[in-house]
Image 1: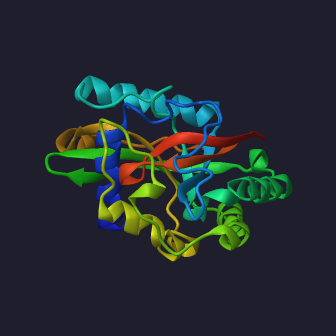
Image 2: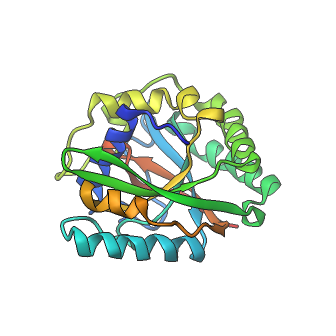
Image 3: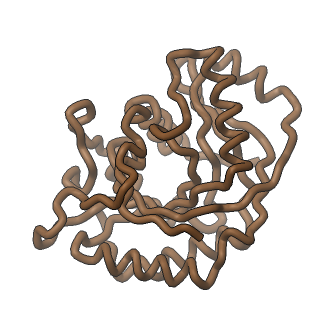
Length: 247
């Protein structure tokens, strides 16, 4: 049984509600806020984009949830299924060095050969609704990859950042303190034995989700298809694509 930190879970939940309409809107390489300014910092999420098998399951589950809860968000171009691996504050001037370092790790790891097992649904409660996801078994490959990312990105990180390290929009102009703290403590709070990989699939009422979790889940295997680095927004949402690798 995987244990999820409640504060982080609620942060993820509220972020998915507030930011679903803008996640993934920029698909091309984008320059982060503050780039080129001396001493500026960028909050990043290094993540894995799953293959068509996981995307198909995630989208099917999302469509099911939206029939029950139309107010929820749709997976797709606006909210792509993904697995977060590492969130950090890095020096903006060193972003290209971060990309180079991540690229070298990817060259040695070859994630497309990994067989990952999705084995159950879960949800995070919030008031009378919940944010649901597909839980992925952590593997030696995932944990090793995450640790390598921690090692190579660490030289370019800073201990913490401020709201200026994140993407803001007119719809979501502020960065709350839990978001700032969560990125600062991602290592070690969400790494190693504490790492809980999952793919978010959408929102529904808790009553509906309880019934969904009682159903038999047909476990399936999938593999990563791409890797990406995103610039984070409020509530830890992956707001702006900075770099991607076709593996």
